[in-house]
Length: 166
Image 1 (cartoon, rainbow, N blue to C red):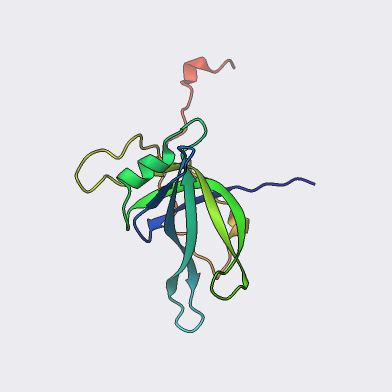
Image 2: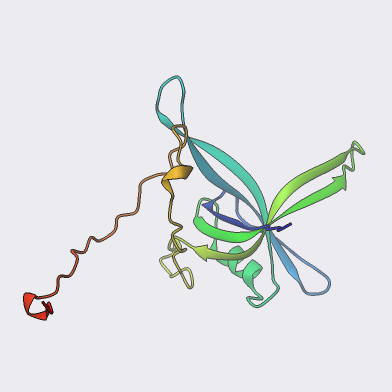
């Protein structure tokens, strides 16, 4: 059976990134992240944002090597970014109560800036995430995916009458 663990989110940081350095020289940066689900209120018929809060962590590793440093230095609470990563389930024993605790987190493999930094400097190599085409079958009355992207319409090109072979 196939298995896929992939997360792609666009949202905003809920707090400034917090970093920790390891004795081995590695680094991890933790941050809170919020995304909105849109749903229709059954009583009022109005569309509402339903926020989802996610804990994330990013490491200095792999090809990029300095992702944790870049996020810590260039992104602040409230800024919008695109993150790509995978889910992990963490478990531990609570030091005060002794109870088992657990949480689901996103391990960020890659991120992209979606806004300029407040000081006016470019935020790095901005690349807009590829748009995923929406299928009408996936829509329902209780979900609003947001506005459709506008596409430039092109009139079909017609061959001149002289090029028609009959």
